[in-house]
Length: 149
Image (tube, rainbow, N blue to C red; front, top):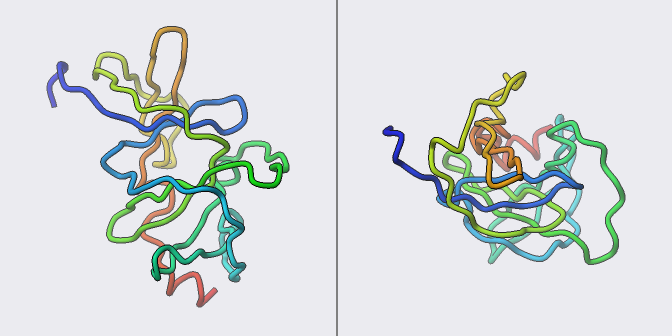
């Protein structure tokens, strides 16, 4: 990858922090609806939703990243449908902000992040945007694995 390449990213908020996912992995963004609970080994799994007849696992991204979670107001938040490997998962975010393009020279490694969920930190003017790696966030957890928990 050359230094002149760029990345198109969907930026969203979790609390006061900004995070981003590659737009190529974002399938769609929907209004928040309460997921149907299913037992899971992972504390960040909130349940499942039906999206046009397909069952999609939904994860609380703030919990997955170890952030302090505050109660959302009724109707607040969005679910970003992300392609992760061969699966689609929904991640709960507070608000989707914008799509940005960052040049590779605007992106640096994230110090102290070694679990595969964080791909780097993007610098845009005076903003720092944490770039997430879809495959590292949840691996390829399938709906079948969720229901077997």
